[in-house]
Length: 317
Image 1 (cartoon, helix red, strand yellow):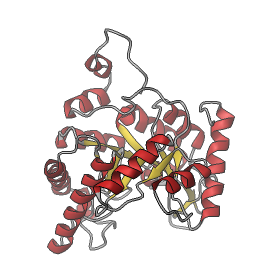
Image 2 (tube, rainbow, N blue to C red):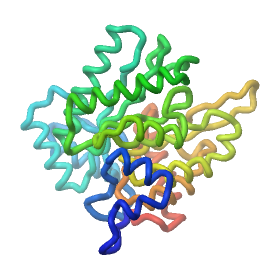
Image 3 (cartoon, one colour):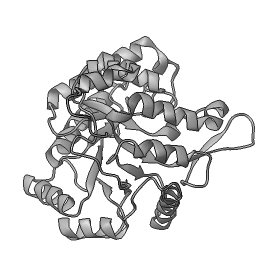
């Protein structure tokens, strides 16, 4: 987030918008607190094998990335965590996120308990290594961990997400990171306004935003209007987005509505709008995901950097 003029409080800056009111009430710290960073923090998986933290950092930098997924698991020793954090800092790499992919609101009790434990241990890892966030989906009341269910859109589901998210944050009490929920097409949070409602209800300093705009595109109307949808996300949630996912989406011509996730640059997501909005919140990582091999990731990164270069909004050095 851009630096505030002297004498202007954060409360005053936030007061002017619905997002500000909701998020100030939640007590969440804004992203970019350490100062502006006007270069694109693009990241993705590292396929190259490495022997140690310095080797990992060199592999990340060889890909031209300035952000990375957490390279360690929750059982890593304190010495390992410290080594990777130091290597990332020296190489100017931001550890963007620790995934906690699981279903903490599962109707199956054993599944739910295992998911809650995974969320807690991975949030603790994110705090230890200084990642920008630990991210999971809110979960699903389906028997598929990330699947659709009519019950996902009920007040009972909303309340369960609030209770569950609070319990995870309260158990860990993070001081260096945040727990965030990825946006989804068939579960909460499924819109910018839904995310604002969750912020108000969860009311924890350790809760923040993870944005995956492709996951919000669930109709032809949103597909063709995705530029406006992205603008709305950043207008209402931008200062509190800790990490973003980069992928693309393609509306097929076969009936009924059929949308496919595809490589960035091969679908209809408005990357010009996405990158323009992202540039308003310097330092926020943009993480490429869900591609099958290193070459596909290279092509995705090339497309994203090309759009950024054409817009002249990021320093790509």
